[in-house]
Image (cartoon, rainbow, N blue to C red; front, side, top):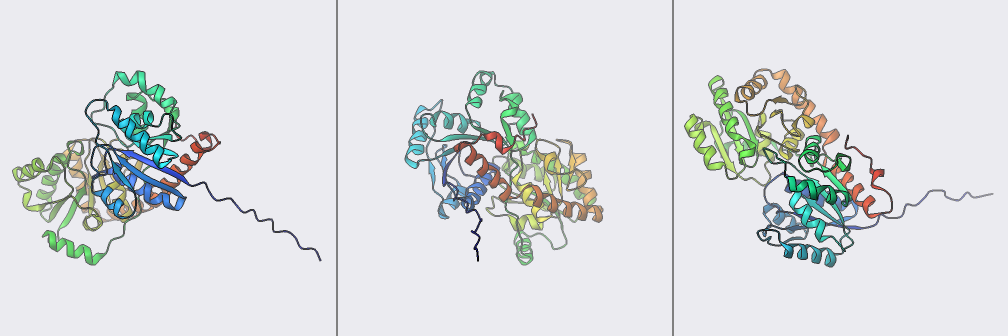
Length: 396
């Protein structure tokens, strides 16, 4: 009797990689949420992560990561071009024996790129969004093409962000990969939602519309308040829930008073885990002048909350207008109001939007998908195979 040898091939374990995420800080914002999802999701990929904040402070998201065992460091960036910051980055890369320095946003990219020189760390740059209004910086025309050519991987979080990098930063479009932001799906407890509603003083029968966002001029919450005033005149049972904090908060609260809607508007301030606030909303609102990939929009979609959003930046790449949400022109309060009113009066439309939003989220915007795509990039730029193996999805 002959015994066949087991032909099963045992795959060697993946090489353990160490990644240093370089960012301004780990305060409140979408970029910080992405970094949190990455460092937590990379554990299953066999990738160790640390974070270095260059603005001199860590912030609440970073502090929460520290408590979970993720090393988060800080260094204070000086005014002007800070050569000491480059020395600090290089020192951290060498001491930590990092394979990759993942730079989030433009300024960390430039510092990280120089800091990685003559170390073993490969540079990855992710652009998370653009200023509004965007503009050309002609010094970038001389610097960026060279830096981009010598950067192994450049990522944009949407096609709109990629196009802006090519147009305003003079980075060749073929160099830019697109990886959409991803999050872990949220789950809400109905009892907690009911309890929170009582704590906020929102009547049981109120029709709640709202947002979770940094209160900042680029988010254009004044337009949201004006649209809500129109809605309140049509539907007196409506309530506006604004979750978040930022420099615009005093102005927005004054505007709510002046518009006569303060008695039906709740400003909660920053909430670390606003899942039950989102679950309380009948409609999620996003009024920004520009967006990359809104993390709170993805959170709302994961809960099946239908959305009204401005047709800017990455929003039309996430929402299917009339399918998983409604898109309206930027800074157009009457159109914003009409879209909200449609969802409040057409229950079939609202339910279809909710169902489609959840389906689209599961297919395209999970944290696992995002982490796998970045892990693939890390491994290819650190290995002998070409980055092209990852697949050029830049569309350029």
